[in-house]
Length: 370
Image (cartoon, rainbow, N blue to C red; front, side, top):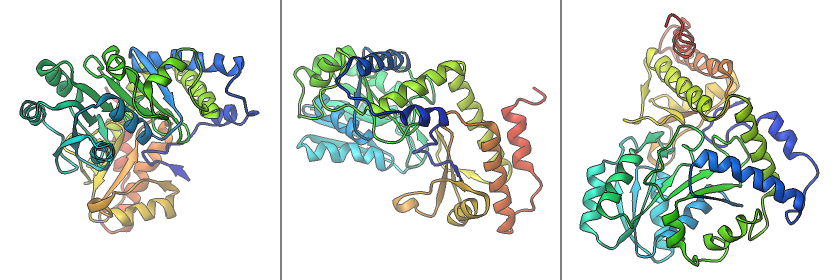
């Protein structure tokens, strides 16, 4: 079965091998050496002033960011389940919350954020997804962060990059907290979250808030190449392996280039056979199709062609399907996916199969004739 859900993504064999070795104790010089080396790679990936690894899902990192960086009122952008989650976290901790809500195919505008900031002086943090994976949407986060900082440089910008880090180069100039999760472009099992922090964020964190998710406690420990609490040793070993693999395969720039080429080729191939891209501004992390036969297509892909893609949630259940573009994906695998989608349309009597999806994908991805 080819796993093409936008998280968890497939874990490469060499990474599985690295994680299958004997269990290592986290309070040892051997693990501290691994931790130190992993941190160096993460600084290169995040380009931030500090990086913190947490033994949690991405939601844990979202909560840690809100608790430590929002002291008054959080402004969150809700264009999907994960943007909505930021608001729920704020409310759970008794913080003020203002929400900008759009349909799941619609990015937030810079103007809407600026208006909310100007009308609500209590806002001291903004939380927004770079890639909102509920619908495969890309928000203009860099432009939003710049505009907010021009109004009030003390407002903390929390950017959920769980389906963006490792997918594309992110301008963090005005971002104070960039969040990643292990099970996306980093091609690991779930359970490890990472935050890249600015110097301004570290200053606001101060002594930190909370207990397990107290980022001040973690900063102090991780600068000594250890963790405040039990480290996710196996996942950290896997993370080092995948970061080394990316480097051996040509580095981050090549990874970004291949991801974009793949996403562009898939989009073009599926549009060529009459399918519609759901979000108005598609993220590179996944290709999202809205279609009246979405559930049937997903079922055929899994049962007839050995391809597992994700569906939609809430009001989009049965109305969309999402194809992962994150990580080190062999071209022949994604070519099989688009070919299988065309075959599924033929089985549904929607169009005669003629290999158009594969032809367009190959021409665009491999730049045939360019």
